[in-house]
Length: 358
Image 1 (tube, helix red, strand yellow):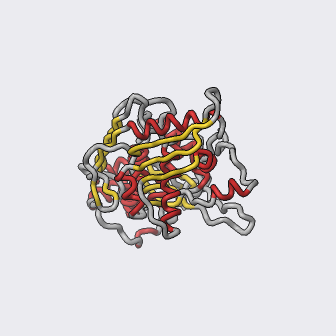
Image 2 (image 1 turned 60 degrees about the vertical axis):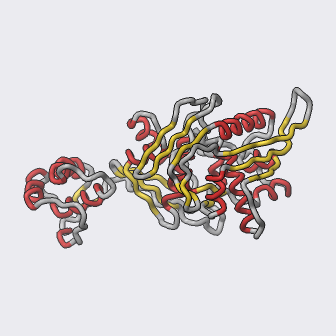
Image 3 (image 1 turned 180 degrees about the vertical axis):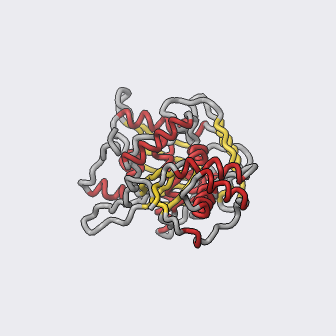
């Protein structure tokens, strides 16, 4: 599978240039939490998600749950509103747009199929009920609402080749508050060319959590939950390996480190206009320096002196204090164990097999 969908609308005339002047932006709330289905087929199950104090329930209509690809419409509306807001103009939840511009900006086909899919997307967005405790603009909506409150379109053409000429979309109050409060982030235009719904979701999370930082590290189980992926863990892990090997996310490189996933921000474009890629992971395991006893010992996870002595016997020839520090870094994003000593002693020999001693 190629990295991206084809560029359906190459920039070659001023009409396309005008459309692409609007920088793509997405709201941070739905980038953070799994509101959209990752399926490419109609899905009618109720989607539930809970993390810390955040609760989301997505109740589909007969048309099914809104998909990651339906989200393109919201991104385009948010982008247009932010463009107007940054130009000093007054904005409201109602967005009037030309359907052709929407299809071009989101890299969709402008044939009859493109317009048919657009109508189906609008129906899913308007028909789905969202219940959530997520705040936007310092306000929490606890009643049910649709992602778009209303849409209206105008048709043109014969009955055999009808097309939508213009659209008028009214965003939900919840979504508009996010825009009005500038709780949005710019995204890469290559996002619209990603083939896989899961890759789109991974990009959203990387963009949200990396922010101005160069890297973001997360346990793979927590990442799967935040993606909203319902596939078996082994299949999710396989997808992450393939994504890392194919290097197919815009702006970010993916690396796997045991049970953790690391997203590395790529460097800015160089003078030739080509993106500098973050360095690839080492082909061989990282080296251990046996003189690491003087390292500062991180706080927060207690390992007893007895466990330190025991690990000397379990993993001979490796500095136990180096292992303790490595374990603390590995466990920092995990839930506390019933016995940190037991988890440490079970982890250490497995970890030591994957490193070489320098």
